[in-house]
Structures are given as structure tokens and as C-alpha cells.
Amino acid sequence: MAGKLMSLGYGNSVAAHRVVAILNPNSAPMKRLREEARSARRLLDATQGRRTRSIIITDSGHVLLSSIQADTMAQRFEATSFDEQPLDLGGGEEA
Image (tube, rainbow, N blue to C red; front, top):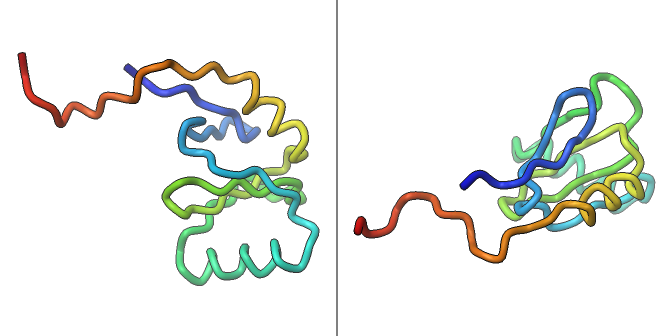
């Protein structure tokens, strides 16, 4: 079973079940978060050179930058239907 993808814009996507937070990038703490992620090599820029309008945090600690508004990203996340069962990564016992 494959997880649902959420578009970040310009052909970029993230596994929706990995998203922890969608944030507005304009505050000083968000700018510090971005710089800390850059220095830790956990920053992924999906803006295609455009202005950053949302920051997405994943459960792995990666920080994703998107040029789509945070409100729009939140609507896309809410529209994602998640399956009741967890994602099977193939590490279990065989029948």
C-alpha cells in the first residue's frame, strides 16, 4: 500500500502521513528554524526560486519550504484521506 502524497507545488510532493506541522514562515522563530535545519542538512527547498510562503515539518525532523500559502497547504492536508491501517513497510512476518 502506498501512502498519500500532498503537493508542495511545481511537481514536488511529500508523504502526507509524515507531515507534523504546516507553519507560516514570517516570524523570527521560523527563520531560526529554517537556518538550524539548513546547517543540520535537514532543509529541503521546494520553492523553485520563489518566495517561501509555508514551512512543513515532517516526523523525521526535515524542514520543507514551499511557495504555496500555509492556509492552502493546510487545506490540502485536511483533504487527504488517510487509511485506517498503518503503512506496511514489508518488515513483518510472511504468511
